[in-house]
Length: 229
Image (cartoon, rainbow, N blue to C red; front, side):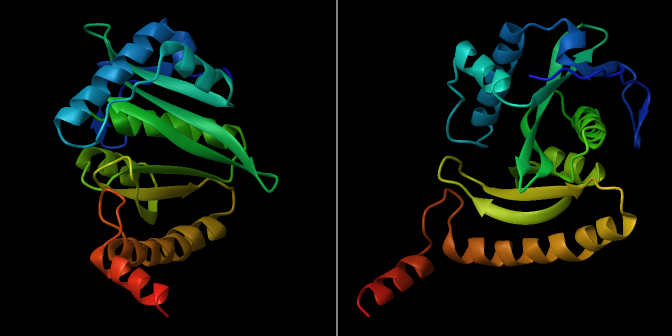
């Protein structure tokens, strides 16, 4: 796992004041992997209680450590300055495709909603990604996770895809944010390419997949027809 110098983030972030929250890298926080892992499991259980996913992550601490250490990843955490409790975390993984670097905004767990923590974590990730020279950062979240959707859009992401996975019980929105230096290319991607891609994937997924990844009646009927052709 790559380290990255990161200044504490407090005060004004976008339109939110979160000067009672510190956002920094895991290395700077003093938070142990054990604490981070326990926090993630707890937040996932809360999501389960809200009906946002089918199952709680059952990863072991060893598996979690191997996952982070086997990838070019960087972990950010949010600390409540008053209680010194961990209240949020996010992970960005740098990957390569066709000699192009891109970032995948992976794990996201926030225990306090409506305080700008998710937005702050995402902005921290984008700054890190741009410093690494990535071309774009991708992410996905549940369609009905309002605070997560808001944090993505507020942080400059654009809806670029729409999916249904067999291990969840909700439709997922896929996001991208272009991080290259060309403003013209960023405008083109954010206002034409990504929105068009989202529309195509939205129609296809809604027609063919239920929210839990199962085939819709329409797709099952089409499969029966083509099976007998």
